Length: 136
Length: 111
Image: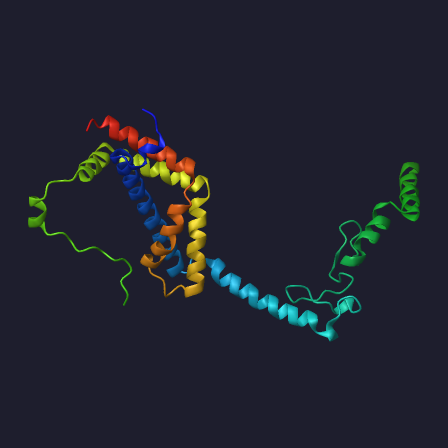
């Protein structure tokens, strides 16, 4: 039983093709029905999201093209993609867990260096207090 | 209101009994009764999903829906959008595999 090109129009091949087409049609209807449902129920968020994004990007482009809004020279007031501005130094204030002082977030790392003993003065301070404890 | 699906008219019962079932109909019944049609459907579905054909068709639908507006589309429209492209873009290997399975069934059904 060889599948030669002559088989193309034999009744057997026609029958097989017919049933294959049948199966394909059913699957096509399934897919069409599924897409139709998703579209009608508004489940495809991408559709609306894409239009929203398009709108926002055109707005952003307009803002960027505006000469009074140059990003490099005005780093304090540059606006990010969410429309927020950030100060150059983080200015939230909280308490240091080592010494208990109120520290500004942007100054926390240098503070920790001194506070926890990387700096010269801090090491001397720690050494002095430990020897004091030993001599007691 | 538009009808979403076009149905062919229900065949008349009296008319049916006078016609002899065609070869196609006989085979179709055998396919269904033996469960082979279901298996073939699942196989075809799996192959078409694996090779990305299903995703292509869904993308075609989405593009069409975007163009026409999602409230102006019927299932029929989508079927008409997918069918020509769909039939043409089934990979040869998938088609060959399914045709082989069908031929095997036809032979084994001892017609």
